[in-house]
Amino acid sequence: MFLFRYSALTFNAHRIHYDLPYAMGKEGYPGLVVHGPLTAIRLMEACTRHTGALPETFSFRAQAPSPQAPGCMSVAASSPTALMTSGPRDPKGYAAMSAKVMRGEE
Image 1 (tube, rainbow, N blue to C red):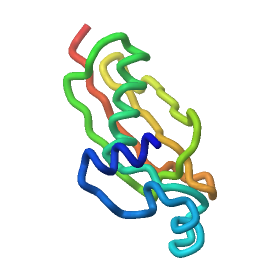
Image 2: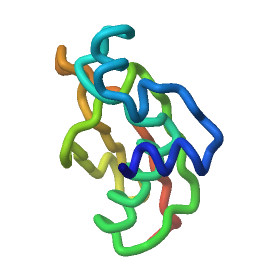
Image 3: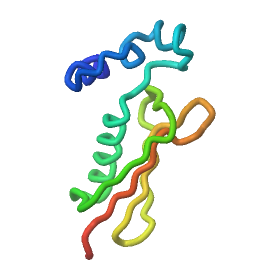
């Protein structure tokens, strides 16, 4: 239901985001596909929870379709001011999206 609502909010009516039989049967995905911007938002939220503060900069790169999956976010510090994140993984284990978050000097 959340993906359907996000689709409506962003005027993205592609059925791969809300019609499971279509996504799997016609498009060949293993399940519903999460919107790239929604995945990026979830990654930034994970970083914010991890650090307790909003980032100064946030960049992300979609690398593959993002499957609908519970959890699956990892956050790792690469320096005192930078965090690297990884989004959900596709069925082959590749990260669907990665992001880099920069925090201010501490």
